[in-house]
Length: 488
Image (spheres, rainbow, N blue to C red):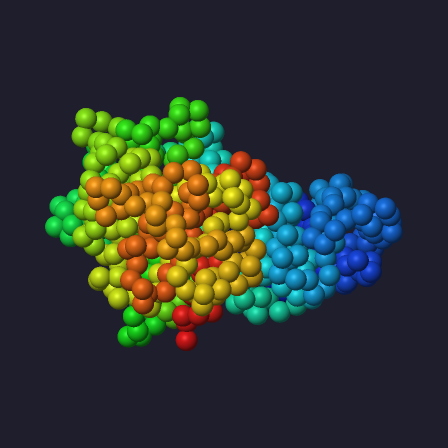
């Protein structure tokens, strides 16, 4: 997998600054106060830094913005990177500063004179997150990146604070890699194998094959993948770090490629459907993070892995399939397949694990893009307490999320004439009727959220902490939710 940039925290040694090659980073606040590191650079550069700080360009910079002073006299460095940042920045400001530094970071070493800047670990996190590149399938060997080191006043304390953030970055990168992979590489077999490999981190991983799924009665899930040569699977990942209490459950849609099945999608843009396993990717990334930071909680992650293909054996529009729960489903549109996968896995998670709560994630509907664009995931829930806790965690991590309504009134749109329910309800309220469908497979006494991440899992332009492509949205928020609500 893509490995986040390794960042070292070292004691302040300003005598090294003059000879440091590559890039030297200094921080200056809006009041133009130079700390010890900035004063050293200013002295070495014959007061070039002070002249820049007194100019119009620095005045126009916002918190976290970066400007390069190239080839400074008096230093071996190729550039001095000036970061406008308060000594006590907010988390968002610190991460933004790191992300902006990542855009300047490349093959050269980077020495960051963080001195007494609070939240230097968040600056480092922002740098690591934004420095992600997915180049696994490029034939040219990747150029080696330079070393990054932070000079801070108490390196041991900052390294300790940075450790759980490094685990989050690992989880996010794992999610991004999975979501970016083409479907001929990330088959259901390959996906399951990558998850099984996380046993070395301390996760218990179990893979249920088609024979076992048939015995369990997961007919709606199996109906999605029956047109494909790739076998359908359910992978169960368990992290048991919290004692004897019941686990919290995360459930992910893992459609490794979605043609739409018999209800085939238009050719234009279909290549983007490699990201239709984004929900399963987020669950995998969260489980990786929990294992790497040794979370003191019990969490189970379940993902349904299928491929939706047209063939002579594919499910047809109009077919009726019985779910694991026992409800019958009239399949009106085979391109509304994610809810069929999740229905069985949600029911299985409750039946086997008796979880204290559940959150499922899925790139489920195009309608959520119409409603919320690429800025927010849709949140649907039967529990104010759980949805409020998730929204609080998402806001704290800067991951956009917005709650939309659920109501029995919408059930009329998915009422079937020949079965208990149908899998689509027409254009009106498309994201809500999808949530209503899933809610039918959740027991009333189980707190549950459905996150529709179709607009945020993979985007066409860069975000605050990610280049264009897979974002890893949700790993940070769910990790924080578990830390805040379920760790003792």
